[in-house]
Length: 549
Ligand code: SRM
Ligand code: SF4
Picture 1 (tube, rainbow, N blue to C red):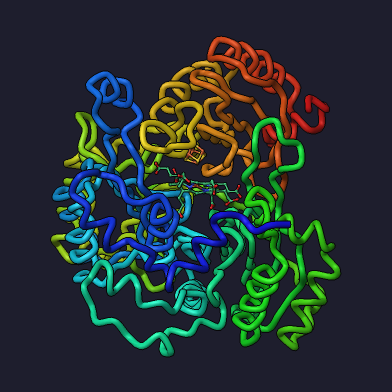
Picture 2 (picture 1 turned 90 degrees about the horizontal axis):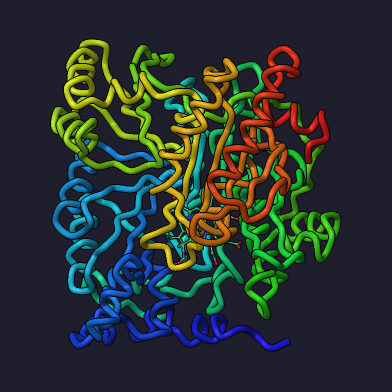
């Protein structure tokens, strides 16, 4: 079968350079050339337009209001105080003003005009931040359980996020040449054994979980790695492959999938095995149809045993039987906690990951003030929240006072369990693929779900609710107890029966329903649940036991 147009663009891109330099210089349009729209993703950016203003612009016969979204590469999601200040200042100078924490432990900034891209990247570079490979057919941001330095093992495992990110980073110098005006280096020096000139068939994602935490939703990744700790020592990792969420409405051949366990490897063998899983996907992945190009389809097409054997042959490492582990927590642990070294950290609830200054809460002011003290670091979680971390006991009161002053502590303490654990993707107005609202709508739907829960004495139920504006699954809705997947403006598929820990997918319950239907369905289900649930049974487990889906 013929390869896709994307394959041709990658091969002819001269190391992801394409005509990006020329596109940037064209002052007649806010757009960049079509082929560059694919290539710019490999540099961590997307061309978008304000969908709220499409009609108005069309009436005025103006081109769409084009701008760019940038996503940082931040393995493990850690920012120093200085880097937070740089992020804040870049946000205010060039973007919509909102810092969006993503479901992969990093941030996105929206609304950057074409002429502001280079200054944005330059400022990030000064702060030792980059957006290389944050998007595109490459390995994306490597995520790792966020709870900071909970034990000495956390630090050791955390370091693997950086190592894997570096191992799988494209070798091309294009980012530095195009955005930072650095010297062109000899093509020989940028020979890329891993990506060659074709890169991966599709995006590629890796997560590392540190039991008992599964805040990274490890099984939804192309490679899901679980740290195995025995007698307080990291001995190695269980490695799984073939997770992914994206589906297409009406195409039954597409499906969400949880990764399949391959087995255990010693810690010194992890990088080799990860590398060869990646090369196997590079060589066996479908390059004729992007819908089926993710590793999950490769694994199912060639069979897990063949896939595993191929990785073993390439790496020279045999997978051992998987080791025992237990994942018991997926949500973030809000408020103050102390780690093994006596340092404090505070997990802030940031609804749908939007860091902004509003009437009730001023996240940006608070975090900027905290960063200015230089007495804390910032860690993002895959649940779109933020951990103010590594605070010495003598500095705790000062940080607490800032969190109080700007309403941050209050927002965190007063939110209900269902709200605190809910996740929504970006969707409208920037996502070109959105069919329905998500982050702009979920908070008001949660208000109504809270009332239903309250009516049945379920206020303390931390039911996991996730919403996305389309079936691509950016908020991992298929791994929630209650998943909403947008089908059209104001309409969603309702999926039920996933578990709270990310070990079981949910199933379609009702198709294409609007808010009144959503609420009446939930009312009936939650009422029955409150009457018939077993002691400490979760809603997802109840739905399954009662064969509701
Ligand atoms: Fe995503 C595409 C936002 C995590 C599956 N995702 C997009 C784009 C870039 C739309 C586009 O292609 O033009 C969205 C940009 C919206 C905007 O305006 O900002 C977008 N994805 C996001 C974020 C920001 C959602 C959020 O609100 O946090 C997340 C950024 C993560 C990051 O920092 O790297 C985000 N996307 C995910 C996840 C969750 C995860 O990785 O843990 C998934 C499901 C897991 C997976 O990959 O299978 C996900 N995004 C997709 C897909 C479907 C991929 C597929 O296999 O079919 C697309 C569409 C595509 O690739 O064609 C997509
Ligand atoms: Fe956009 Fe769909 Fe991803 Fe939401 S799930 S951000 S609507 S691509």
